[in-house]
Length: 110
Length: 119
Image 1 (spheres, rainbow over the protein chains, first blue to last red):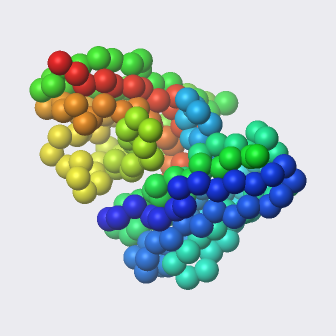
Image 2: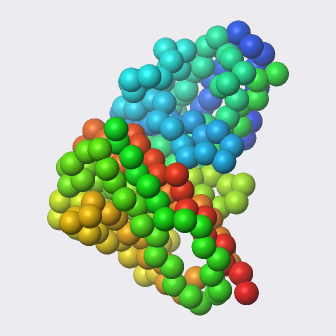
């Protein structure tokens, strides 16, 4: 299966709101609510930020939210803070016990 | 607390094999599936597949079948990824992660194991 499509980079100033898109197709994002988002700081392992489209694990700031419309999932980060600067990856269930990741988006806090 | 601790980094020659371990603690090992993810230098995450820790049944992603094998030792709560016939393009960090929510998302990750394939 093909990787989900994410913008290579997104930027915003502290306090602003940004949205990262994740475009799939009717076999993955469009067919399941099972989209998750991961934050990866340089040299670190990924960290789960959003699951099942819009659920937050315990300990993740409510500044992070997820949504989905059709074949596109989105991660919104409100009230940007310097520590939000990282790479973000979406991931979707793609049926038949398989998953697919997005190419990743580098978030820069200006 | 839940922890996944992976084996250390290795340098391998092309054609060799490598086996990375992922030792779980802080939860019942056989209740959650284990996935494997590859990240080439400067690249994104790539889902390699997963193993059912209750039955030992593996599922491999297209493009990885044939050269990788997932296995378990449930007596020591450890999963293994073995890659044979290594190529330079296998140079990457390999992560294991626990499948939460029935396996539909990955809620805890190992620290990663870097394999460098070079002659």
